[in-house]
Image (tube, rainbow, N blue to C red; front, side, top):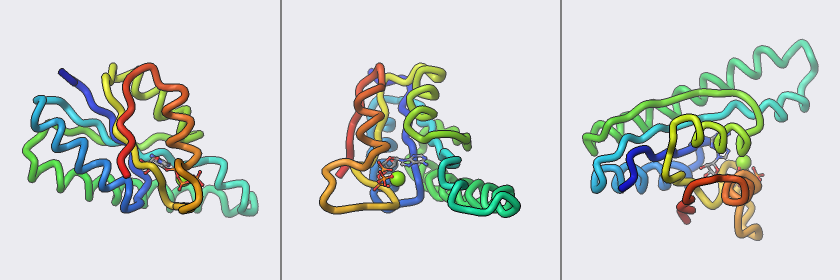
Length: 140
Ligand SMILES: Nc1ncnc2c1ncn2[C@@H]1O[C@H](COP(=O)(O)OP(=O)(O)OP(=O)(O)O)[C@@H](O)[C@H]1O
Ligand SMILES: [Mg+2]
């Protein structure tokens, strides 16, 4: 049913929960899971120009570690798995990547690292639901 499932992860516990859900579905449907971490370039503006390269490297390293944690989980589920690190505005990159890999489903967390309880959805999740061409499963 779903040949390709995209799961964007930002290192938050909600995103890991979404990743486990994606892996369980992939196991059921025999899908391939692509996990994606986006280095949020907007965050670099908070830093002085001479610090930005270093911050970007740190974020990328954090992304790689986050994806390794998902990959370890994928091993337990025995599911075909690929991970990607990209840069840009998370929602835009997530939606573009879903098109690129021809994902029929995106599995995303309701909230992420900011995690404001008064918001039903974080801004990334909200935009992905709005812009995606495919189905989106929002995990609480
Ligand atoms: N940089 C990112 N790379 C990959 N996936 C992301 C990224 N940021 C968010 N996500 C995905 O979107 C989900 C919701 O996070 P979102 O960013 O919308 O909420 P938030 O961080 O609580 O709020 P906001 O970012 O609006 O302040 C996460 O659980 C994760 O699945
Ligand atoms: Mg966020």
